[in-house]
Amino acid sequence: MPPLVLSVLALLPIAVVALFLVALRWPAARAMPLSYLSAAVLALAVWKTPPVQVAAATVNGLIIAATLIFIIFGAILLLNTLQESGGLGAIRRGFVDISPDRRVQVIII
Image (tube, rainbow, N blue to C red; front, side):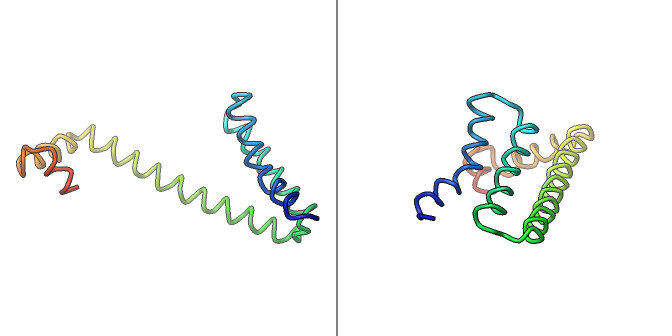
């Protein structure tokens, strides 16, 4: 198969996402599984990737996604805890006590 055709086929999952998210305004929960399916079908049919390798890549992607979700959930939980306990105000006052100049505060962060 010519390299140009392979390049266009490699862009197909990204084009599927663009079509469903931007053009059709579908939610990501519906668009992303279709993009995954297009990538998996291309890997199996065009590039002749063994099904075990596609399954392993899928599991790896799910583990990475779960890790990111745990990190984001923890950050949101910490932010909400700081807001409810007044800790965010204490941090803000601490920065103002160091220097009232916003530029210095940004450099410290």
